[in-house]
Image 1: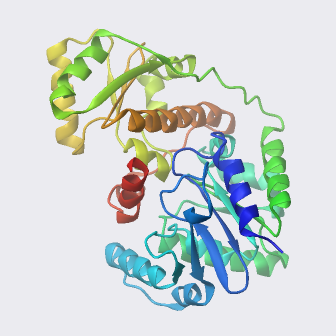
Image 2 (image 1 turned 60 degrees about the vertical axis):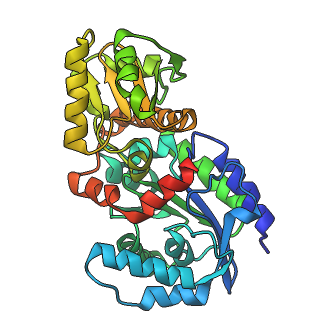
Length: 370
């Protein structure tokens, strides 16, 4: 019989490893016949305790599976969230992960959903489906990108039903394109074994060594211009550099490989548009580009890439700067490694717009900033 303590242990195990989880990303759950305990939205897995989980009635969650909801995405997600709130047993002041219904759907006691760098190097690559089929066969279920929330739940519900009919079993590995992975098992030891096996299979026949990604402080004329430009708005900026960031800042062509987000989490923390500025750009020209970016995007650039220079991160606090830097660094790693699997595959404009305007992710962003 599983326990909440085992759920806490495995949550911290993966949550404390940036190769699997960054910031408030990922979620974990444990369930019995009556209840499911799942990570609350926006709560980091790394140091989570029992108070970071929400307990819900599986019977009431099952009613969501049978309900009909409006076609309008905003109304639909509002109603789903409302129905999910009614399924909460305790505590009532936390919001359960938006992926609660997915966890409830998969018939294993423990579900661990993460966004590992090496796995997303495949999931965010052009040959993702082919690679999964060749490396995992019937051991895994691959699901094309679907907008998170109720639509993804319905998609996964149908895909799992088909998998059960075809193989007479429940999928223990579910790969989600441009998103991450779900691993399910009836013990935390088996979950860990499965994750180790997945990484081993992905590495077969590939050179997945990364350029050094540790960021060092960096200063340039442009970083000073950015800092001065936003000082009156109480925004903080810092510049960083590493061999990995140098790889992508070396030219506009290289920058294109990180110019759009791969996953919803990148949008949550870094937004969906970034700014590339030529090295040596004059102050008045740089300030004009900054104003134009804000006019076009509706927000300040959280990430500015200086040609042959560093990354300039702009945020409301030092804590937020660190989060953006961690997430964007992971994005660069994914792009770099994706070259081994057919090259980078970005989210589409429509997929990006859905996340940009999704209330659920705005809530998660606000909790993470805390």
